[in-house]
Length: 135
Image (tube, rainbow, N blue to C red; front, side, top):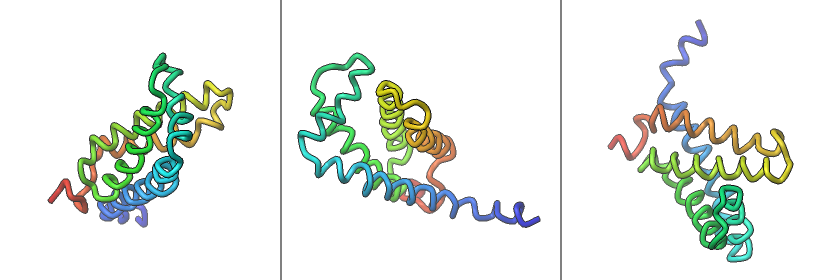
């Protein structure tokens, strides 16, 4: 009985997931990468080498930092929500692949996999009614 009553709070749940993930992407992941500058961007961008992409690691690292920062903002706002989810899913697949390639196994890749799964779920469900996409 308690659990069935919670379904009326679906929209609030979507909002909390969007805002929580969005702030984490913006403040913990994307923001520090943006501030890290070209040295960090190059290091981050080298993760694409696991997919056979061996050119312009600095540009790819900057793209990842921008995707995480802007993607976080877009998640929070629920604006261009599904394209933001797709970009962030790509980042999470790349991050998980990088962790595996570095020999960190499932425990090293778990965070990227978990966030990626949450993003796939949000991609399928949509941003909810408390979003700019719905306005």
